Length: 72
Image: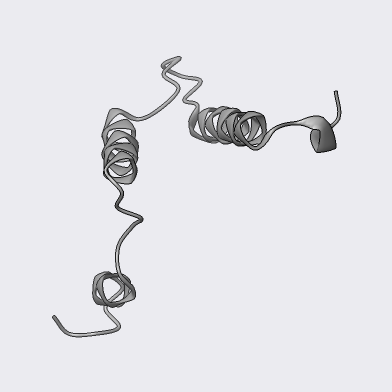
């Protein structure tokens, strides 16, 4: 099957699976056989929960504040 034959949902699932695999590869800890740091895993789960409830992320203002580009 080629990409142009996939439904939107199939394409989204493929992208999601690819992102998960990539994150696991990037964060693998070969010394402990632990694929994802627990703190990072919890943060990813929190992001997923926010997305499921309709939240799309943080505002530009919040990003600027966190980066120290704006007082607040």
